[in-house]
Image (cartoon, rainbow, N blue to C red; front, side, top):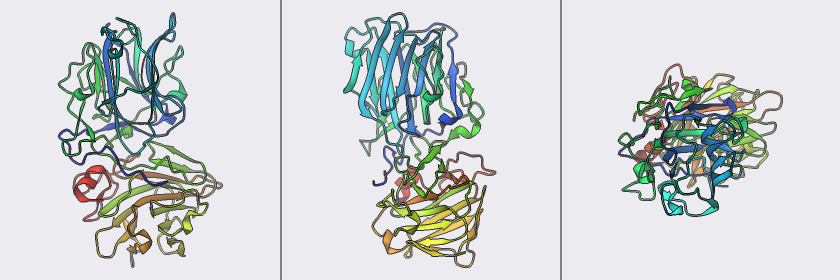
Length: 471
């Protein structure tokens, strides 16, 4: 399997989204709000951007409007990674039901979802419109439309409106249905069925790329809200000026700068090596199972000068590696540390280049140490330099030369572990960490929040830097 090269990420945009919210399903995170007065039950719009985390784990719900007794309007991603949009009244059963034939399994890219609902439309097909990245979905595995002038439970004082979790039963919260990943620009509009073009546009220079636009001029209606996640201490803030959403199990560290206009790499959940590995925190934390396993990041590069960090949240002696590899590896290989096209830094200080080890080359590292990586693909001799807590290692001979086995191939960050009796965990920081730094340092272009300042000339690996500085 080859690496996913970052998609749907314009280098320059007229409108920048500054923040998203990272929902970790293991935390049971969500936010909710109940309307203070009745609004329009017939006409409304839901719009948001998502970047998925853990895939194929059951019904993950970005949004639900739910009444006691099990009446609901529910948007979810099912265990087959298809998008479902459902409406149900306990007295009369299912009132509408849509399931896409399209699956959503790209963990490297941001995608835009819009649901426009308007039961006042005489033509059945105009009552529900679903858009993905600016294009209306026309192919459904199931499509059952609501009746003319149907009143949904949305925008009613009897319904709690929930972002990040949902359940079709009497309670709106079910542990298995927590959304996992990132949400940005969450817009709920009461009284208007907007088109996707009211929330985004195709890039002028890259017409296949859909990007956000400023939504502050939209009419959100009586019960509408707009979550831009720009206040870390109040992620449920309604930027439209209404009552804020109540946060549950969300912290300031769940605010992320990984957004539809500034896309960062994560672990790639589609490539998990040969043993079970548990990913969380928006695919930024990896807990390695028993046996050798390796996980690459979702971005690969061929030129440029790049910097990233990773925190050792737990270690199992020597069996934790960090480094680079090529995109054409056999990810099911039981011994990833001896492969050509790898440069690895072991926890016990060993260096491995193309499978050849050098004992006690680097400084050893352990729990809570932060390893910095500086990758130079622009100089005549291409190199990689490792840092332990901001100190280059080894001090006497820092740079490791990248061999000919990397020539002509995409090079990507890779993380390796083997947990036999203790945990072996990495937490990644490509510029938007899942943990709090003691100080946030940006690169020369102003991107990233690193524990330590990137070396001169090295920049964060993200979509905007890729667009302006190569990659």
